[in-house]
Image 1 (tube, chains in turn brown, green):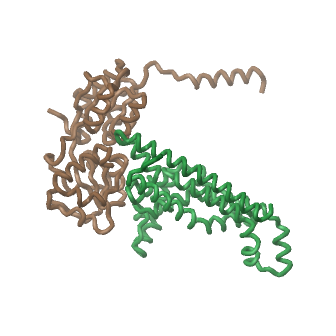
Image 2 (cartoon, rainbow over the protein chains, first blue to last red):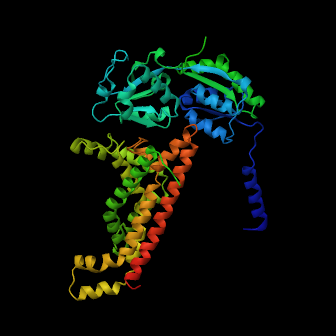
Image 3 (tube, rainbow over the protein chains, first blue to last red):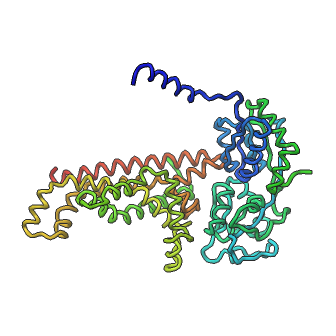
Length: 256
Length: 230
């Protein structure tokens, strides 16, 4: 092609390379269980003329470790206090910004088509019996996933842990455990009540008594060195009436 | 010197077992595919070539997902296995072996195919003119002459199977003692607070095993070639 048209083409290509962005998007690392709720919140915030919010959803353990390694997160929402403490100890969050966002419940779930029934979960519940000879109980890995840790907590306080420990199917995050139940690969699973609420193919058998586990708390904080005006604005909006309304819609328990 | 905890030794032995089963059971099929690709002239040969090499370029997670869909208890093959033999691949080390076997299949096929193509076709033609049937030629000429390639391919595939992660964790999940191989154990250790030490030990062990596997593969191949006077 001629020299002129080639230069014109190259110049045009450059136009696509340089992004036209006046405002940096806000990057939020959040626990996997908040995926649907936060995606909706992000859309609502953007519609209100806020900047774009970029989310990365994974287990709180994975995210905390990534932030420790310098991942470019502005906000961190954990599903458990211990992973927020982990970052606080390493001086990686803005301590004044730390707050409790919402709470959640823990439920025992089964595939939609399951014939299993439980009236109430107590120390008399025969979980190994319900699993049958080959079935496994899907949970987040109790070694590091908050949902798994709460599950272990609850099962231990009810005296059911030793019976099911060898029968666990440990997932990387609570959503993966939920997916295994939805696919019918496992007869039972333990997930958050918010996960079970909106998931097709999964039904709640019973809720774990709140007294059987540590209160499920989702702390939020701004990552150290990333407290831009946009990050603070989004955090404020999320903690405000509109943000909380969206989270409540998905079943998260809002502190009064 | 590396001193391993019991959990880590379990992961090591499980890895070795899964990789060994994966390679040994896929060897006959790999040889058959390599033979067809090297010698055969049939419509669809190109497609077979593509399918055999698909695991090389497909993301392992996609491979794991496909296995889940086909061999999970609700899948067509997995469901049949469950009904007929009460046999379950998911959440089981056998599923991990299947995943590892499929992902390392191309390594074996390539190595065997190269070995087959390197055989002087004149030898087989001579045998044919002397009255040797197809099977005799296979056993007497093709197999022995391609042995260095077969063994090298198997050992390479073994070393690769030791390192398979994405397909295994997606298909059979991460169950200690059952499917938690070395790579999965390293991944778990990295996720847990204070697990960096364990992760480093396991990673060092993996490197040693992988290197040993590759070196062994090369040494064996050379020895066999020398024995055959080439």
